[in-house]
Image (cartoon, rainbow, N blue to C red; front, side):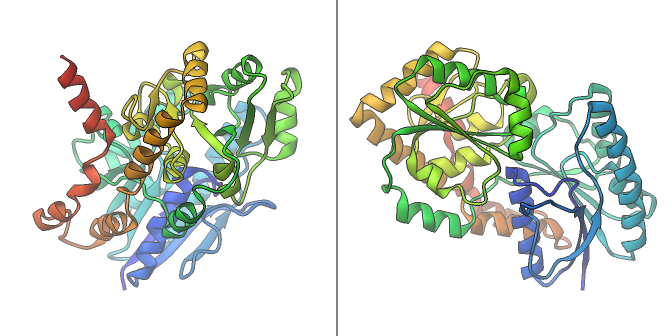
Length: 390
């Protein structure tokens, strides 16, 4: 039985963690011996908790305190990860690393000459020198690299590694729930789901809610209520904005939403393939995303949503008001959003992940042909629209 040592530093409820769970589920379904190294969670279980068939190896890692305290905690976690991977590695075992962060796993695999697969969804890291170090580590140790978007693959060079694009997909259970309840609820709110960071567009959302005082807004943040209260201590939260902490079930929020936003700063989050935007589109919700990065690969401007920088609040407000008031336009964009979301199918994702860890089957021509449909998404449509206008 092939052994996979999977490593993810922070077992949270972010999109890249959910995608990694789907990868591990696929590998266990194929009968592989999967060992997962990740941190313990608090009261709210992360997406990596309770995966059938996975053997867990926990580390103690918490992102608390000032940046330097977090940084030293991060370095200590790498030492523990190195020792765990070193102890688990055996002949023919493979290392599977999610995001750039667990570099200790890469060096342990490199020293034992094990195949190393990186799954990269984003590269936004607060310390520029640390980011450069992590990228150099990945470039020097990776046997193959999986990118979550076309944008990421085009942005980074990995001359020594096999390179693949594996687009995220929605779990079949989520798709079924979305299809059943897409037309339920009042659909009167404007929704944003974001991490607890300034660069994720939180100040911009507050300003937008202030400008649109008659419209209901909902904000879901992947953090505890205590952390949220501390962050917003010096902000004024308007009465029309409801702020929620980490949620185990996002379906009610999508059911209530009319429009879903991503107002993140593209300098910080431009390479992220936004999983929440894909979820919103499966409900038929038009979306507004930044001009650059992986999130806009899901959107053709004016067809299933809009590409607008979160800095241009007036433009965002104009298009939100247009969607809320123009029913024919909304209906057209809603259908287009669902059409795009349903192209990101679980069977394509599973086949690609299986190929990554099956010896000698790295995306053969036959399988590339089978997977061609997943590449027909709005980024290509946007190029066609732009060329037609010229």
